[in-house]
Image 1 (cartoon, helix red, strand yellow):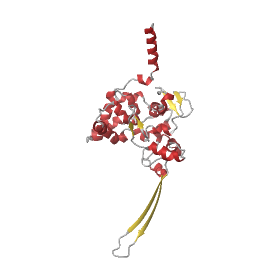
Image 2 (cartoon, rainbow, N blue to C red; image 1 turned 45 degrees about the vertical axis):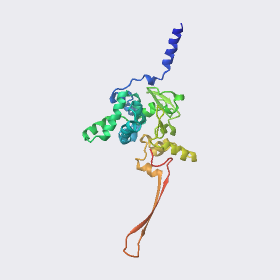
Image 3 (tube, one colour; image 1 turned 120 degrees about the vertical axis):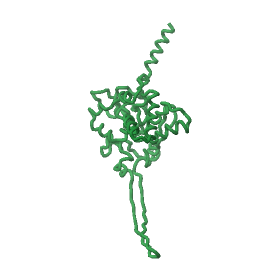
Image 4 (cartoon, helix red, strand yellow; image 1 turned 180 degrees about the vertical axis):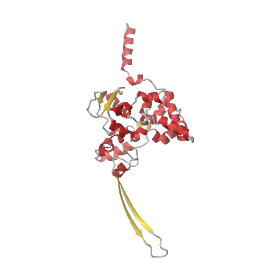
Length: 291
């Protein structure tokens, strides 16, 4: 009788394990992308999908090869003297391509090796092929609206449900399961990647300090706007998420004033000179540059 109770208790525990742990691990990039294929999102959200395609989120891997290559080729094996494993790979790709969480150990390592090769190879044909394959990985619709949707409050929200779409608004779609959450419209949601990242093994990765300057220098002085207010809502920027690569938002965030005076020397040989005074003002809610 005791063994029967133990079996029932074990089954209950197993059923309580988040479904994400039961997810099939992809063996190829195509299989991985298909698991979270967000191309179908454009059928109902063409405007948002088109905006996203213009964003750096849509090329989050191929636009950041240098930094990731250095981490995988130098940081992990040489500086920390560790083996390149999926745990180490995710210290970049959990943010740059969250879907890699569902890759097999072998595929995750292979992707890291492809990143190294894509950056290092002198063979243009090989580079083009690698970039084409790696471009399939990015921060897509489901990266934010599912995979990372509950990350900042898993104690309350739990693991993301596989087929659910998480949203910051209260509009419930008749097409798919919709779960409204009050975390996606807060800066902390963006900060989980655009700031200090805490890896599953506890290591802290600081690719940038964007969230630190935002909270410590902007919010602490009475600032109230969120990341989403400036990078999405203002000027109807939507899912383009413009940042340092966009001239218009840079102009908005930096005040610039210059005074130039010509100087003519009357003693000795005349040499044209100028006195230049430049004033720069940070009008953004965080330090510049950062990302």
